[in-house]
Length: 148
Image (cartoon, rainbow, N blue to C red; front, top):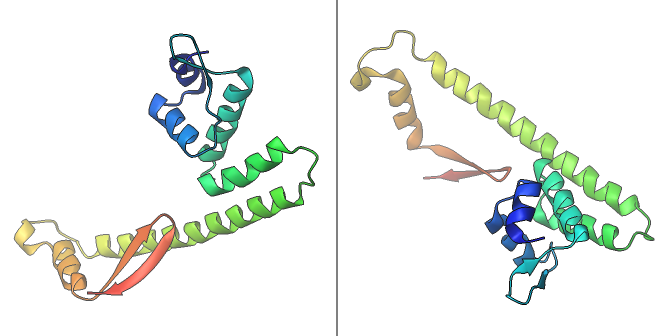
């Protein structure tokens, strides 16, 4: 199967398939005589597995760990449970962070009782006054406090 067919079948952009190959998650496919990528059914199934994991927000490192077990089915799966347990802890932490973020946003929204002109907007005033103090950066499930 050519890459465009695999992309359509798995609902995965071609660039993403190539990225997974570069990351070593998906083995490089065979090449046809005209140098087109030719994917096997096993590679398509592996890509489905990767996509399912990504839909569950599993990191590439975690996927890499899980693929070891797919490639070595005789291994004991207690380590698979450990990978999943750690991912669940990470998701729970992110839920807590997002819950806190929602509370902060609701508090910010509550300062505006009667919308008017932007020059008197209490939300913008609050954001400006908070900008000089502590800011929180939320990225990839991490919260970092910096003073600036």
